[in-house]
Amino acid sequence: MTTELDATAAARLRDADQRYTTSRRQIVGILAEAGRPLTIAEVQAASGGLPQSSAYRNLAVLEQAGVVRRVLATDEFARFELAEDLTEHHHHLVCTRCGSVLDFTMSSALEEALERTARTVRARTGFTVQAHRLDLTGVCADCAD
Image 1 (cartoon, helix red, strand yellow):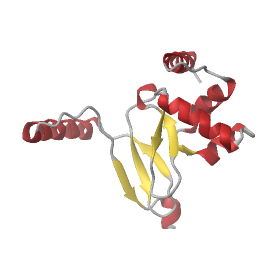
Image 2 (image 1 turned 90 degrees about the horizontal axis):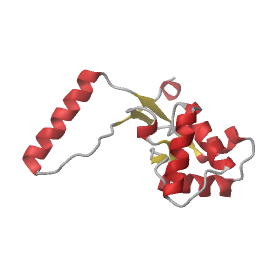
Image 3 (image 1 turned 60 degrees about the vertical axis):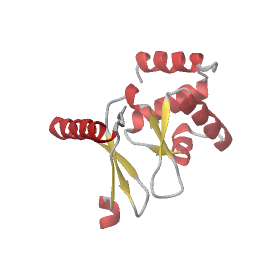
Image 4 (image 1 turned 30 degrees about the horizontal axis):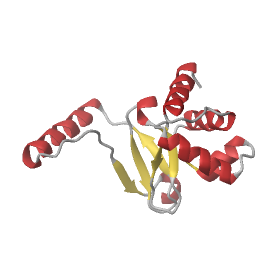
């Protein structure tokens, strides 16, 4: 985990009148290393014993401060990842069988096409798109076997 990520997380928490505690720092590190959105159970397993109540509470604070964002899948488990502005712009592949969520990036040509589509939407409806995310749902390679 980078010093810059820690500094940004600490600043956002400070702005939300919260502290960057050891548990929160650990969660941020786990999410930074994961490379995909994690369930609370996965965060707990990677932490080596963080109590479930502490994981829920700290993830809620990190989400409220804009350090973490919640990713919804097709199962009952929310997943968490670092806020996109702390990592890179990406989208998700969501498995409708097991609920796994994987990150993927699109080519610049596809991103530009999506931006053109957003401009068309604004011209037709007056709706101003501030950001976009694309979730592709289907069956992951593990479930397809």
